[in-house]
Image (cartoon, rainbow, N blue to C red; front, side, top):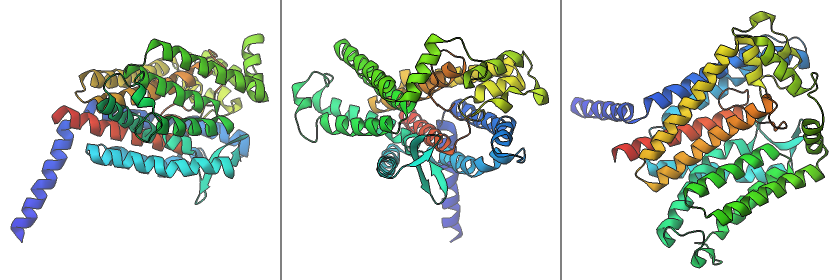
Length: 388
């Protein structure tokens, strides 16, 4: 009996050792640092906005609300980073099979928050299915592209056989993706719709998308923005405010730009006040509030951290031996970097507001859990591809 226990102990030790030696520890450490920065943001930016909106609340209000998500997210990140390819695909399928019905519920019986119907409520917790479904979207898209190339060769876009009406062609994926995009567009969630569309376009480009189809997709994206501009007053107003007026200092973006400007190099600390007037300071405009509190130097350090993570992902993609792993890392990199760009472009008044969180930093359980799961599964595939 003692011998069996000793063998079991050594096997477990060996598995943990293999994981420690095989995983990209620098990438994992970078994700943990971003999570720590998000914890700081939940305290420094969330309390002021919460007091402004809801009245007197303790300084730790937003941090406490995020604690369950931090615990679940960190556990998910570390556990899933130990998975093999089969388990990664299984989790991806489960992720989509759970989130798709929830996304349909937002279409049939929506929960309205801030004028948007993108939410569902489970056991008293508000969740955004489109955020939680991002890992499944990236991994199953990568799996589909790999499967199509195995079946039809490298020419999967112009091959007539690949476009026949059957279950092994493009049509099942295209129809499901258009349904998901249509529901998000209807919510309305233009920002997430743009994000999904751009991530898919980048993954298809890496898979060899012809230039003529790139032009068609660009036209479809422009057409979608035009439709949103014409049918939704709030989208119309945001575009008109962005293009035809000087920046209103009392607007959301006006407060964000002012917060960055007055933060200086080292920040204002307890004297910071722009965040108190900035709606969604703990969420969409968290970067502006952090820079006001801690200064431009800290803000630049955070940007360098983002760039470092993107660089690590790109290096892993260039070294990938398996096309499936290449496509997964491409999707993860695209999702992470495009979402950062959309958030910062809004904050810095480079584009109209889109309501996009800053990965791992912004307050929001759905976004946080989605990115923890995505990076955990991506780390698992990087490790397996390196050592197989």
